[in-house]
Length: 413
Image 1 (tube, one colour):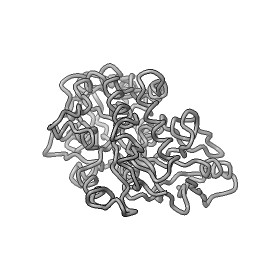
Image 2: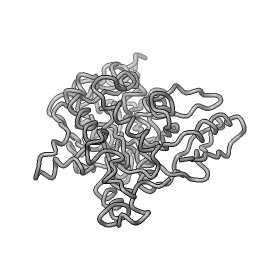
Image 3: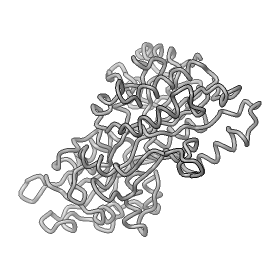
Image 4: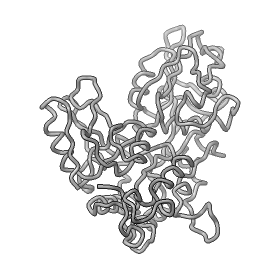
């Protein structure tokens, strides 16, 4: 497939245009895993290679575009790349990465596909609602965890004597009160803290990080929070007084750590999640690898047991298991997901996606080192084997590109 990327920017990015034009597989979404997947390089900001920006061992992928989980899911579900924007010429203005629009082959998301999103897609693009003779039949969706993660709480607070607070420890109940605006000054958290206004920072738009966080809040204070990928929706439409909306994970970390009295929430990729001077403990625990792993240890992949709908591996919702309030370990945890199609009209896309699945979920030669370098946590072998054997092995009826399942159908060129 030839996906032409015409960028309405200066000639300085001609090299970037050329590199993206040669690649075939287009996707983007959550900003939390973008250090793992890779971001576009620009003339002033050369970016390190990620596993999904056309480099070996995954040639054929365009640069991953971090625009937020909600925007990534929408781009994939509607097959519309117009939501993929980036400051390609370093002028502070977001440019459309693809003009004209191209097919979107996958998404990265920390927000799981909702029942409504799945049913809407299935009604429009999947059998039996859509006949296999129709070009609108794109085939089944695959949704699988890519890596484990946490939501951390960066903060900046200085005592009256000029000493920076370096041991903040918040309970789940205090997180409810702070982010709902029930308490508004730091001395309400701890009598030894100054009467400094709490400056809540939250993600604007649809964010998987917001969804993981508000899922935990909903488990603790359902009268104050629902579960939503949009913070304002979760909190009932009104943010705490004086709060600040930020657009991405990097912006959240940098803004909070530069603002006196501030607190926010972000994945571990943009902060030192092992330092209590940078992020708060939650119920006494930091979001270390050990504490996050302990929290998620009770979640197993679907077993495919006969006659048990919740274990049916053909259903994408069964791979998106969540834990609102772990019984042990760090309390605010989840996964960042990859969302693909089983079927693609272009054999190059099929091959590229299967290559990614085979390596990413291998128990030997895999991406674990890159995942760890991005401050995320590799899946355990039970998860890796289940995903690889189901969606990568040619003998599986659910595998990407299975000739029977994909006969005559697939995501458009």
